[in-house]
Length: 220
Image (cartoon, rainbow, N blue to C red; front, top):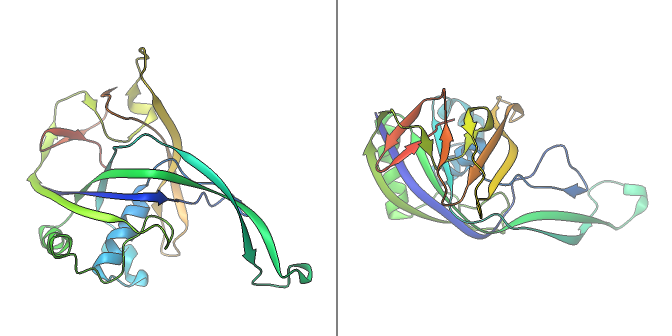
């Protein structure tokens, strides 16, 4: 088994929570479905074929920078009648100064293609993190032989149900409920309550981690 590792970073990012409309909130981290969309964009996979292309793809995520959320008010142009108003005000939340390490477990031939594109930077579509204005910088790290790990700690995003949290001085844990599965209509069908920390290993139990390089990774 092989896993390709790359980093993604940007000054800003936004991964919109679908249950919010005019006051759009963001998830606290990039999620597996957004990662698959990012990979599909740089490879040039048609969005109608993306679901089948990434169906067996497994994603691990490490959040490298602390989570900062900002909110700004925007004047948006109405696309429908909107009571004859020319525009409307919306408050939009976004993430600031984001950096992620992404672990991808896939077929070797698909990983080879992804590696070539990441190294050459010949992207079919410009990579961005949730919003076309938030262009992402991607850096290929390495491709590792991976195997099941017997470790009981991880620094990657993990479902909260597996975590055994130990609160110490200056330890910060982030919690969220992120989408981990979707369907052919690009609708989220399954969510997971997750936890992660920055620079702190999280104790886990009753879950399978995988050894990728020097890290023990949970794959969604």
